[in-house]
Amino acid sequence: MLVSPRSCIPAVVLSFVLAPVFAGPSKVPARLAQARYVALAYDLGDVLLSESEAVSRPGLVMPEDREALNAVRSQLEKWGRYVITIGPAQADLLVAVRAGRRASASAAVRIGGRHGPSAPSGSVGSGASYRAEVSSADDMLSVYEASGGSRSVVLWRGQRTAGLSGASPTLLEDFKADVERAAKHP
Image (cartoon, rainbow, N blue to C red; front, top):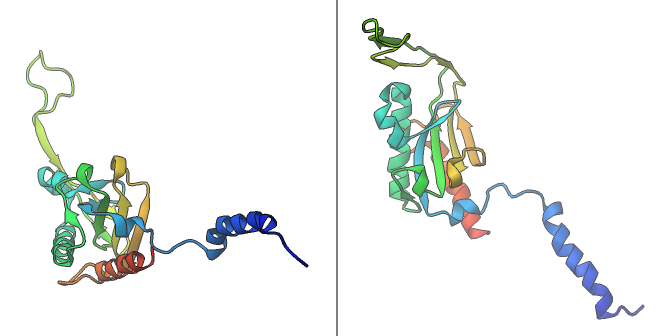
């Protein structure tokens, strides 16, 4: 049976359209290999706190999270694939760390209050607050799309016991391997 070239065109077009559907989702988004600028952040569970924001709010970040972020920063700088920016507004990606813990405590101190009859009810002079949390014992490294400051699009996430500890965090090594794989096979 002879098939004309014109009758093959719909089949060829259809195969290009459906090939990605049947191939399954890519494990690593190409965006990770295409990005150039990253910002670093702390994952506080309900919110991400950028490294630059954490300077003015030191009570929100646990010491083990600071150690993890410093280790990740050091390894990212050595790797040289990304440029670390001051804040998420200048970044393509947001790399967030969360050291594993089962529980942590919190405290709050308020200084001040009503100052005479003309002060509004409930006015407060100053204070500091700290938070309590219960979490997984595993460390977590998450990479988000940084556009628009949203953390809604997770591009990569890894979780492992002691995955952020040491001079070369294993979660970052996993991330680097996945990015290199995505760069070789776009």
